[in-house]
Image (cartoon, rainbow, N blue to C red; front, side):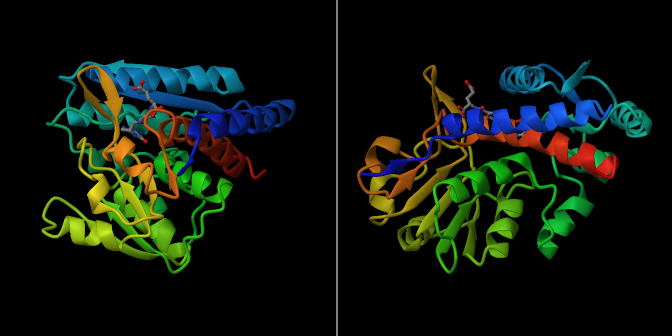
Length: 282
Ligand SMILES: Nc1nc2c(c(=O)[nH]1)N[C@@H](CN(C=O)c1ccc(C(=O)N[C@@H](CCC(=O)O)C(=O)O)cc1)CN2
């Protein structure tokens, strides 16, 4: 029977550490501040932003929230980001994804100053990650690695399949796992032999956003499953893998909800602290 990788519990522990870090910065007259930006009115984004703002408050991080209508032009949005880049009171800036179609998200990644890039999406920070220098990494990737470390999952030399090649999870997760000497394979929408790859994998990270994508007969005994999928079906939240079918076969598995998600929010706050320290040479 699988070990359940409990992200919710671990996030609570990390929260206490962040609180202490924030208190220490405040005692030195430094007040970590994150600016969270919402463009449009995506219902899931509202949930995630609420979680981020709530956690920021709980750990003592100042939070500024900006909401722009979905019609905002790309140019206006980028100008707002440039203003925040120059604001000395703001340590971390993030734009909640997805953004409306007329906005090119890579322009957002390119515009946020890398030293305030709390999401770790700027090409400079992504490049550093591929170089093996991983100070600022996408929060979801930090969350995945935190679970792997906490539960002593050995990735070295393991066949690790990442399903999904997004800039925010798949590609940076590949870089981070390669940095840890995993043998990484990437699968994506054009992959034709997914079940062949899943059957050969010791570790599977899935971030596709498609429920029932990985079923019990597609995995081998002892597999480790990190499910980053966040799908709503008939009012239920579920990941990309058939949890009930895979639990009896897996050695470890993240639940959805309660796995990677809560740790993603905690990791973001951790990165506000890291950036604030970097900006203040602490
Ligand atoms: N700018 C960004 N946009 C998006 C990111 C990101 O890292 N940066 N990731 C996702 C959404 N996301 C964070 O923003 C996120 C996803 C899920 C959770 C979470 O805690 N999920 C809970 C369930 C919550 C629910 O009830 O729906 C769980 O898994 O237990 C937090 C943050 C896309 N956009």
